Image (cartoon, helix red, strand yellow):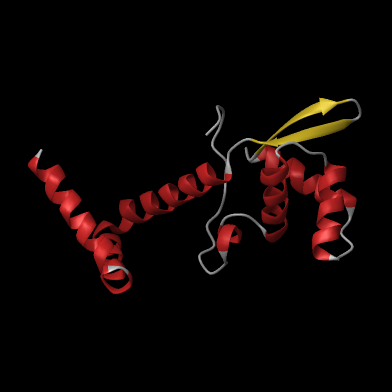
Length: 143
């Protein structure tokens, strides 16, 4: 992850994908910026119009991108009259950070329940992964 402050988010477990931690428009904008690497509000606005077929206000996109910069998700620099936005964090790093924060919060408050659930989940969904984790734990314990 890049230098600077950590991006802020709220966890909404019932939502899907990145919408669990970002709003729907924020998620669409971040997907575009992660793909484009460097862009302006005008370019993102155009891409959103193309992708969604909806009429979305330019000012809504501008405000959302400003908020994403304030949250630490985007860097912005002035280029003439416009701002150029770049990701402050990669998608992969953001996803890893999100998982760490959620699990840290659960383990801090509900350690036994969280560990038990994860083990039960793996036993049902991927018994081979559970066996690999068991072997890894034995190796760590022996060293």
